[in-house]
Image (cartoon, rainbow, N blue to C red; front, side, top):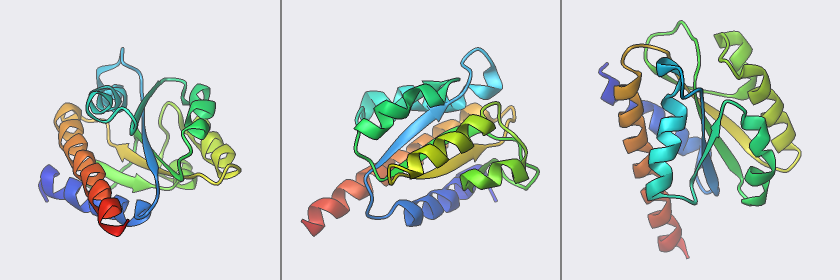
Length: 161
């Protein structure tokens, strides 16, 4: 499966998870490390087009808990580099799966964030990107898929009003 096909499959999975909810996409990562910066780069680029849908959390996503809660969302989508052995470059994960997949540099704080946000009625899903030399290409394709997801949700909401 090509990276583009794989990302389409993962976006479909994500779409079924967030259907009908108000969501926010949080980019996580270390901009000083080439292989770990894909989440923050995506949040910065996405925030220019859809500022109400993206937040750049950098390496300390737990510092953004109040901002996330104040946005009155129902679902948080975290995009981060995650070490996993399965085939493919992108994987949709629930927070509890992080320890089973390997760790990201933020896995403990991502699990903590998900548990904390659940107390506020916010579901969390993680888009894990395998650290590879293709991260930049994968990140661009994923961002394009997220744009389609956002545009589709706006269309569905208008149509259903």
